[in-house]
Image (cartoon, rainbow, N blue to C red; front, side, top):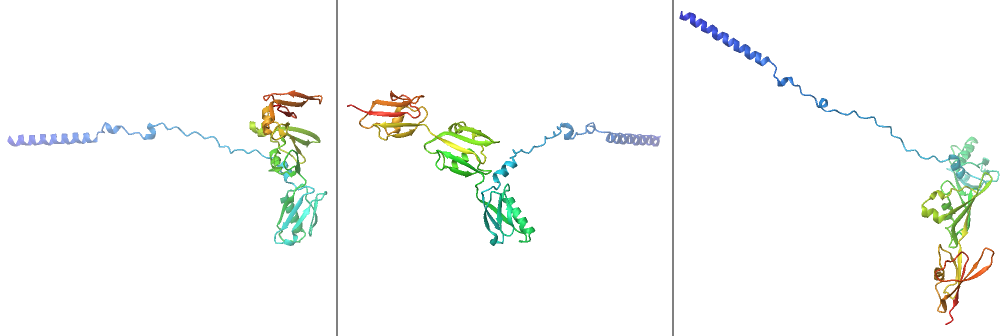
Length: 312
């Protein structure tokens, strides 16, 4: 009986142990609640905006120059002097004047038509003639303008160095030629007249230099063409004489008064009087009127200011 009880107890212990082992195994095999939550990648949690397509970048466009105008201002014309050299052939160095027919005489090749061509094109033409005539093997010809006579602008009037000046693709504006002429003389006006010939018609253009620079409007700085003429007018003058230190003619400035005119003449002498000032003025009919003036009266162009001698 004891043996039977011990056998039953042993079977119960084995059964309990097996049950515990199965429970432990089931527990370890069951998924953890936390393990069911899968971490989301950062890309899934953050909304990343797709890069927008950038607009195409446009290159800045430069204003094109007129090639025909540029070539015309650089082209060789009748009367121009050319200096021509051939590399490794110093005996062919030539100074030639363009004839009225538009040709020059060059050694070995004879007459060469050059009018309407740039100096570089003239060099290429002479090189081709030397090569085709088998005078020089692989000639390298350089041509430069020694003197420009075919395309000039005349500057006249009240400038320091009146004359004719060459025009090219760089120096072709009004201020360029005034600077070349030494600037406006002391007797010159701020008013300049440009006379041009366009399509057979004469065109007159007046330019106020002071107003152009005061306003900063360089659009009035006219671009000239060969054959144009610039005339700088004489400035309006006022004449001062009598009992002043330096009698003479002086430039009339805007809103000038009698006192300012006398001041330009050096002021009164010891015998002069402020009460004895008289203006001689010519009217529209050419008649001269004598006007007793005070020091604050305005003066006009071509007025003659006379300062009389004091009686005491």
